[in-house]
Length: 74
Image (cartoon, rainbow, N blue to C red; front, side):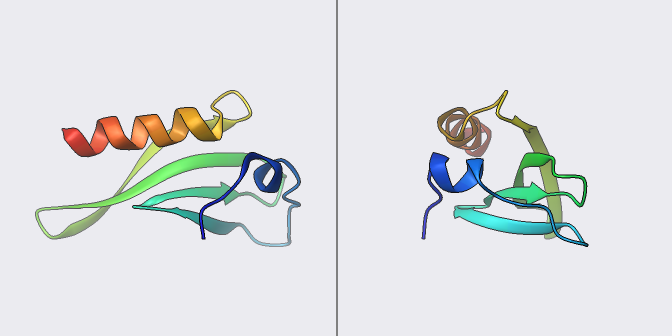
């Protein structure tokens, strides 16, 4: 199920970092300190890689999705 801006806004930190997926490799990582970081998981030459897209709210959900789409075109 895709994320919404309201859902990302109210995410609370836990004892350990956790991820919530938006789809097509995009996810938000919520750290124990409460930071919400956008990342893109992808494969290159058969190996799992991660691309950091920015910190929420400086990078909105819409901006993160656009960055995901731009990165996938490369």
